[in-house]
Amino acid sequence: MRGIVWDGERLIVTDALDVRAPREGEVKVRVLRTGLCHSDMNMMEIPGVQVPIVLGHEGAGVVAEVGPGVTQWQVGDAVMIGTQTPCGECRECRRGTPANCDINWGYVSDNPFTWEGQPTGKFANVSSFAGETVVKASQLYATGDLPPEQAALIGCAVSTGYCASCVLGEVREGDRVMVIGVGGIGVNAIQGAKLAGGTVLAVDMNPDKEEVARSFGADAFLVSQRGESAQDLARRMREAFAPIDVVVECCGAPSAIEASLLAVKRGGRVVLIGMAAFGSTAALPLDKVVSGCEIVAVMAGGARPERDYPELIRLAQQGRLEIASQITRVWPLAEVEDAMEALRTGQVTRAVLDHTR
Image 1 (cartoon, rainbow, N blue to C red):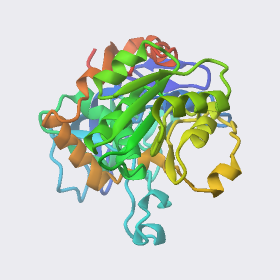
Image 2: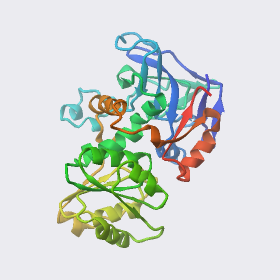
Image 3: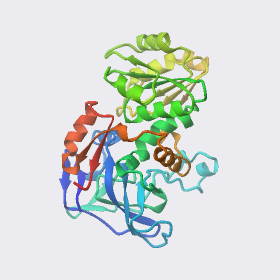
């Protein structure tokens, strides 16, 4: 089977990757498209990650094989793969906080991959860099006629950004929303805020992102300056857009997080969803926080797959949620390094790999 393996030093496109058959409650999916995400790159930089490993967590394709006890899926069904599968039975699930479920991330009983005969790790319970992957049946969602390159992004970029605004941010009609970072997460945070009735200021270091931000619904745009202090950036944010009811911080830079806390209005909400570098820290302005500021951070934007993924698929099929134009380019699998570099340098909103070429 063809796929991509991270061996701790480089990404290797290989035909020597194997995946076992699905077991009870599991499904094998033939992956057609996979999105690239900064989370994949972060896994390549975090010390101590099990290697070799198959990365990738934005995947869509078709059901290739069903395991014992699986009745809801048939071979050939078009599906997207979600990372989250709360058990529904533990204390956290019963309390209504499934994001804290101990086995929330789709745990499969063992790593189903081998590469050149050696056990190979699985990432985010998806590993969509593989031509085929084994997942829990409950991780799959029917995508119908939605193109697989669009369906793949719903599992992370689309759901995380949208839910960061609509679930964690609780954006309401008339709210003034600031979205920092106009990438794959940010454009969906903009769309979510607009669909909820908000007015949006987008912020990014790259002035070329203004056209992108406005195309997804941003009403205004502000360029942040490299090396600018959090205090100066927050002042310019307030001058441009106050009062700021909700901030959705999508870039993970400590200075942007600090500026978010300083810029939001008293009683406002700051959603931290950007992937920060391993070991990074940010200062907390206690006088601002204790006088009234809600800080929210939940993996995947607080998305509940069973509730949110089908709704996002419907919105995309109805044309109310724009996904196609988020995809800057689709690369052949063998060009993964070029696609990663484009993502790393901010040349793309979303990069996608095509497993069929």
